[in-house]
Image (cartoon, rainbow, N blue to C red; front, side, top):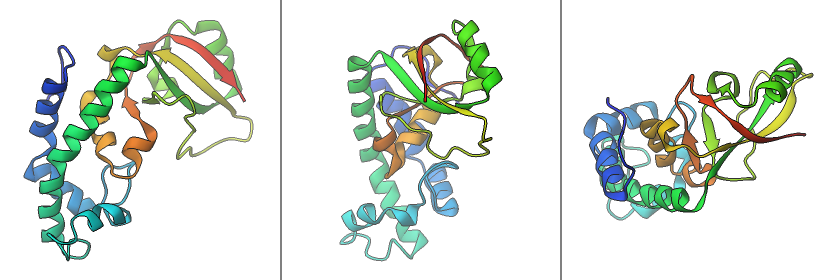
Length: 195
C-alpha cells in the first residue's frame, strides 16, 4: 500500500480512496473482522447503514455475502462523501486538536519544548473539532493530567490512508472529524490547556 502524496485535491483524494478501499480485499477484511478498523465501530452496530440498503440487501445484517455486496455498493459513495468533508475542512480549518492524558513529567517537557514534540509522545489521532475528547483513553494513571493540544494543520504530516480508514467508519467517521498523523512526526504545539 502506498500512501497519498502530492497536492491534495478532491479528484485525486477520491481516486486514492477508491483505489485502496473500494476493493474486494478491503471489503472482505471489513466483513471478516466485523468492524471498520481496530479502533472503529462494529459493522453490526450500524443499524442505519443496514436500513439504507434493506430493500436491496434484506439479509445483509446476518448474511456475510450480502454484507459484502452491500459494502461494495456503499464504499464508493462513502469515499466521495468523506472526501467532500475533508476538502471542506482543509479549506476552513488551519488547526488540529487532541485531548490526551499525560504524565506530569511529560507536561513539564511540553511546557519547555512545545516547538518540537513527537506524535509518539502525544498520539497520532487529531481532529478539526475544538471540542474533541479523549475517546477510548486507556491505562490512565491517577496522576495523569488531561491536556488539550492545538497544532497547525500541516497536510504533509497527515497519513491519508489511515485518515480515510477512520473516516469510512459509519458511526465515528463524521463525529470525530479525525486526521491521523504519521508516527514519529515532530509537531509544534501552538497552544495547550490543562484540565
